[in-house]
Image 1 (cartoon, rainbow, N blue to C red):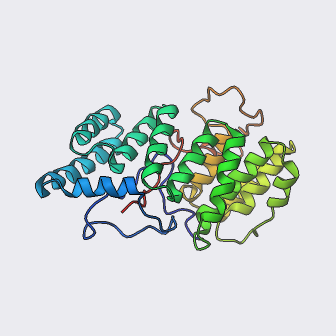
Image 2: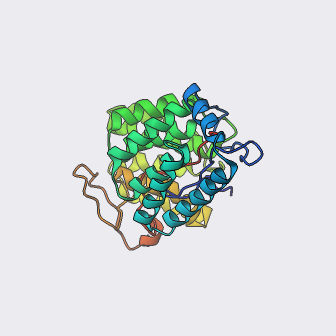
Length: 289
């Protein structure tokens, strides 16, 4: 079975830094080709005017900030990002790292503003469009999430089934929350059970939960776990169900409108239903080179 996403689990950070072409990474398959806006090109030109030694130091500090973030040393990472801002203000690397830190702190209003700022620099980036839609989703702004995911879907390349199918699952869930139930039902069998993503199982489980058939939903999730074997490959799909409220997070949820159907039966281990750590709003690679 293929891995569902090339991006890590939620709250992970992969970053393509604006760098000279010889240093820049190639575009990732998770996003359609896109380039910087005029403002982004200007920022890049200004960055390239810096002395080479200063640019090298900048990239070293970006890697340090990433390492601190990955080690959950969030405030130390923010301190390094503040230093980076003094070298190149509003560099996408800094904006993305700062957004990741604020996600960890659940400061979603600040995250949203940062993603909007990055979008101005790379307006056609499907990665940023996904993150903006995902922020609407995890903050339960269902109508806005539905609108953003609907606009994003046709922009995703057909070759990237994993991300495309995950977005379709999120869109199905948004339809359930916005009284588009028949549209959601029409989506549940869009892909077969032997497809290279687990969409079939999670879409059907979502409909079962909506209809109050908890046992059928849990059985469907167990089937997905049995077929994929490695729970890590299902993490983004499981996280989506947790964010929506169909699967209980074992770390609590302060939202008042979480769905009341929360499977906790011992026939599915907690480690299979919930991630090892709370995960909110993915931050995925920037295609800004």
